[in-house]
Amino acid sequence: MKKREIVEGIEKQPYFETTASISESEQYDGTRDLRELYPFLISGGKNTERYYFMHINNKTDYKFNIKPKYFGDESSYTEVFAKRIKEILNVNNDAKIFCVFDWDTVYENKTNLKKHEAFEQQFHEEISNGIVVLCPSMPSIEYWFLLHFIDDSKLRKSCNRTLKELNPYLKPYFNHPEKSLKKLLKSEKYLIDATWVERLCADGKLNEAIRRAEKNIDVATVSGELYKQSYSYVYKVFKK
Image (cartoon, rainbow, N blue to C red; front, side):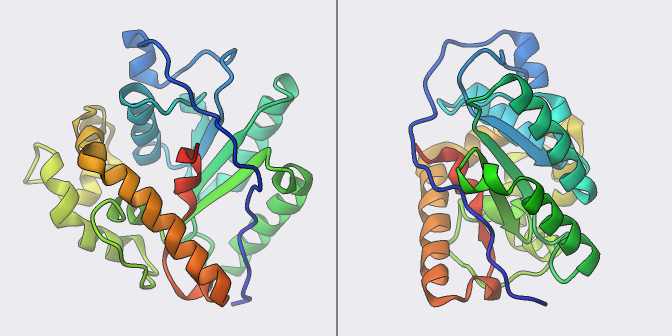
C-alpha cells in the first residue's frame, strides 16, 4: 500500500460555546439550529457515530450543527461527504466542517483509496485552509472509544479486533449483557439512551482520550510511522 498522510486542518480556534438546553425533539434527532455558529459535523455510520455525537451535543458543552442526514453509510462516505459539504457551504460561507469516518474501509483497498483521493482533490482548497477537517480513525471509531480507557497505539487492522478489546470497558455501560458489543453499537434501540456516552465521558475520560490521540499522532508523525499504528483524529472536533 502506498504510504500517505491524512490531510489535516491547520487552524486552532475556539469553535465551541455553552448554550441553553434544547428541546426534547432536538434531543431525539440531534438537530440543531443551523443559524448558530457551531461547527458542522458529518460522518460515515448511521447509528454509532450519529448517536454518539448527538449525545455529546446534548449532554456536554461541546456543540455542533448536526442532522440525521449528515450521517450515511460508511462504505459510501466520500459521496455523502461531498454532497453535504456542498449543501453547507452554499448557505454558510464561514462554516467549519468536521468529517468523521473509519479508515479500515480504505486501508489496503485500492478502489476505496482512489475514491478517497478523488474526494480530497475535489475539496483540496477547503481542506488546506481548514474549512473542512478530516477526522479518520484507524481502524474505526471504536478505537477512539478505546482511547478513553487505555493508551495503546499498536496497529489494529479491523474493527472486530478493536471491539474485542473495547468489550470489557464499554459493554457494562449498556443494560443488555446478553447482547454483543457489536450489536449494541449498531442498533438504534440500544444507542438512543444517552447513559453510555455520559459514562464514557465521565471522570475525565474524554479529556484523556483527546490527550492520548493527539500525543500518539504527533509522535508518529515526527517519526513518519503513522501508517504503522492505530490512530484517531476524532480528537480534533473537541479541540478548543
